[in-house]
Image 1: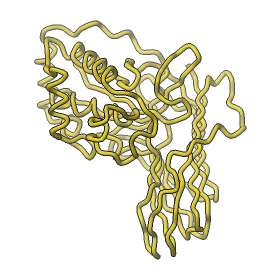
Image 2 (image 1 turned 90 degrees about the horizontal axis):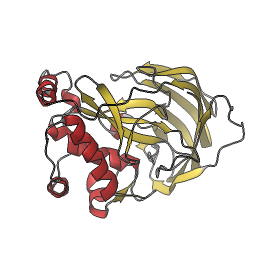
Image 3 (image 1 turned 45 degrees about the horizontal axis):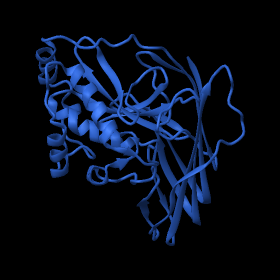
Amino acid sequence: MRYSIRHITRFTYESPITESVMEARMQPRTDNLQRCLQFSLLTNPSSRVMTYRDHDNNVVHHFNIPGRHARLTVTAEALVECQAMRPLPHRLGPAAWTRLDAMATSGQWWEYLSPSAFVKETPALDALRKEFGLERGNDPLVAVRRLMGETYARFEYSPRSTRVDSPIDEALETRRGVCQDFAHIFLSLVRPLGIPARYVSGYLFQTTETHERSTDGATHAWVEVLLPDLGWIGLDPTNNLIADDRHIRVAIGRDYADVPPTRGVFKGVTSVRSELSVAVAVGPAVSPLSHDLPPITSWTSHDPSEAAGGDSTLAQQQQQQ
């Protein structure tokens, strides 16, 4: 299946700022069953956009816009081809845990087994483990499928119920969150079982026939776990799905902190209020996307930030809904 993607991010400042410095992880990956055939990233005001690859082989675009401006728009467009994966078996067999332990103790995957910025041990998380009756069981594939179903059933999907920087305990306390929270909760539960697990940012193609509860017109996040014989497989706890060819992978990391779609700083001379709005459109490449602007959704509402003549890291990151 081929998909056309348009992802528009708009930052609006109440007072003009003097410079923006930003990096973006918006280019879909080319690996395994997915190929990024075309990609472009444009900014308004215009800038010279440069690229590099980070340690997880994610493509990172970065740019600097000097001069006063009251709005910054970043438009990313891509053409991606995704192939369907082979159906997963129901289980891996009695020796799977032994083989998985050998993989985990090799040291190659230590960063996907360790705590990270949003994936930390807390008393609330320990209480959730006890509630789930979390244990390895007889088969790692059966265990992660059960864990995905439990997470889906016990947490409510609720757009804007958390912030981009919310710690895991907020979603654990309220039992509600967005895909970013579901992914962090799942990672926090599965890594202590000795299963390497990583965060995936990207997009989910939705149709009228599918009934996912995640927000259409936004970026998405899910998890990949490493299992013997299968390699990395995707699990979407927000929608209780095995990731398939409708899941379009953009970046991988330990958690959201490694892969925000946008991250930046700006300079200003007075107190500045910023607003972030996002529009995402994903559709089959056989039906090209209209060049009309997709519906813009405001993810942050005029968050005040001080920028008194110096750099200030602000709400320049968009939450994955």
